[in-house]
Image 1 (spheres, one colour):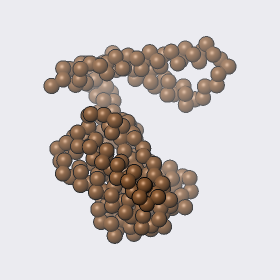
Image 2: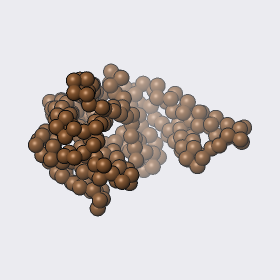
Image 3: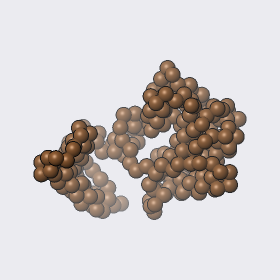
Length: 239
C-alpha cells in the first residue's frame, strides 16, 4: 500500500508519515520544503501543492491521501487573508482533483475544532470552506473521506508559534504563565486539575479496575499541569 502525505514536512504531517511507515505503508511526502525528519524508507518530493501536475506525480499509485498542507498559524492567516484562502481552500481543491485522478480510496483532511467556533478568523473560515468542498467532492464523485478536527496540538517538532509550546516554555523558563483573556480558562484549568486528582483517587478506590501505565502518565501529567497553571497563572484583561 502507498500513501501520500501532503504537508508531510510539518509538525503533525511528519508524525503521520512516520506512523504510516511504521505500519509498513510506502510513504511519499509532498511539501514546499524538504522534511528535516524524513526517514530512509520515505520518498520526498518538493513542490507547490497548487501545481496539480507535480502533485499528481507525487500521489500516483496512492491508496490514501493525507492533506495537511496550508497555513495553520491563526495569526498568519489573519494577517494574510488572501494567502490563507488561496492556500487552504484552493490547496484542498487541487488535492481533491488529484485524488480523483489517481483513484485514491480515501482522502483524509486535517481540519480544526475552530469550525465550530466564532474564533479563528480567516483560518476558521478557510477550514469551514475546505470541509464543505471535501463533502461536495465526496457526494459528486463517490470519494471516501475523513475529516480530522484537531484541537490544540503539542509535542516534538511543534512549530515555534505553537500556543501550547509557548505556554510550556514560559512556565519552564520564566516560572510563570501569562494568558490574555477574561479569566474563564482559569476555571477550566482548576476543573482539569480537580478531575485529574479525582481520577487518581479512583485508582485507589477501585483496585480491581485495570489502569495501564498510559493512564497513569496522562492522569499524573494532567494533574501536574493543572497545578502548575493554577499556581503560575497571571490573568491579564482582554485588550
